[in-house]
Image (tube, rainbow, N blue to C red; front, side):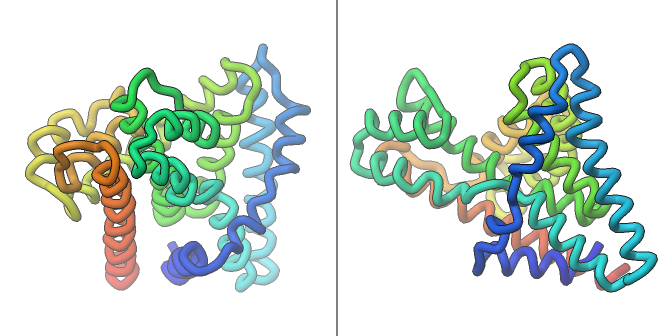
Length: 273
């Protein structure tokens, strides 16, 4: 693990738009269109995930052998590419404006158009928006940082490529297989983040409501993060209007505090090792 690299990633995320320049997925979409095989989903994953990983792995090995110092910059590019697409908080801007005004019909249209979220009522809509924020924050940043710190850049890249397959493959069997593999990669970092939420939020509520089922394999990451996130922020009497927007802000702040906790832990880990 290279803590300096992770620190540069954090600073770039906060103060620049370099990630959006690096994240050019056109080459990968072309590869997916040519290689997707509904009758052979494993072959699709081999071509769209394993082959790019092998190429990048060989490039890293050659650079390390010939010009050892350049591997740092390639690692940095890989991590930037592996981060999530878009800005989770900014994506909710127009939704929050409509919700703050109490215009739930407009908020529903915005959520459907901009976030791909459909719901039967306002309570279900707001729950899904909260889940969207926590999930996008997790899969776009925390999961990538976790796997890079633990196993290096290739596993972080594998995570993002599986995410792209799950979201953009045209056939359900390919999406389902990618989703199963993603679930395996999400199991550990999602639980570490859930515990982080509890440490920077309400640990007593977490221990009472979440801890008994924390290690259950069939508890999927989005639902786990939603449950833990809501328990970790201040309870509200209502989520309508201004209070609902305050809840969104509280969840975003929770993600930020958890991120700071992770970086402190990684710094201590680097010093100790």
